[in-house]
Length: 277
Ligand code: AMP
Figure (cartoon, rainbow, N blue to C red):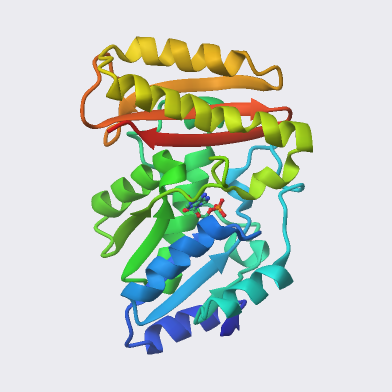
């Protein structure tokens, strides 16, 4: 496994590689969710690149950039066990030097859900992902369904800017009790960890209601919200029933209905979603 720490070196390598590269961009502190992306990439490309970069420009000043969990040695060990070919670990100074001044911004899909609570977050994401795409030149890049709005925005960026990269969206990996795996789960106290199962419970409730014949999206939002409100440690940022492609809110449920949630458990903000079909 090659560990590459500079942009020049990564550029050089991606030029040399005749192979088609599969890229898995991450912020590290890896879990089974990340590894399912790596495994998916390994089966479909001649070499897999995992990037590890806690991207400062996607955190607002009041967010958890400094506290975000990091353990590079552990991540490298896990990736070696997964037979990863290349790990790209650039420095923040090189990615965003003092004179840095360029942004990539997708203007549709962002005026709702996460953006309302994390203004500027997605332009930080699209900017760093565009840079990673330019540096690494992958044939395919892998993103998780858990961050569905992020994945949709990246797809839009790639289409609009004619980036010749196939975006693959991989199903959410969950703990045994349904909680979506996330690096941020490590913030949860034991009581908060128990409370955090309320996200999956609410998503499952929505799916059951839909399967039981419910057609009114608003009834789903209400039932999900009241279930979450019964959990004293949980505070809702949003409960959405939206079209899985456009992320526009739905009034009537259809085949493409997606339930999407952001809930704070104590100080930890968790997101999750589920297709209701
Ligand atoms: P992060 O390190 O949190 O930025 O995540 C890196 C990539 O892994 C993103 O594309 C996420 O959507 C994806 N990911 C995170 N958690 C999961 C999960 N539980 N299942 C599948 N993919 C995930």
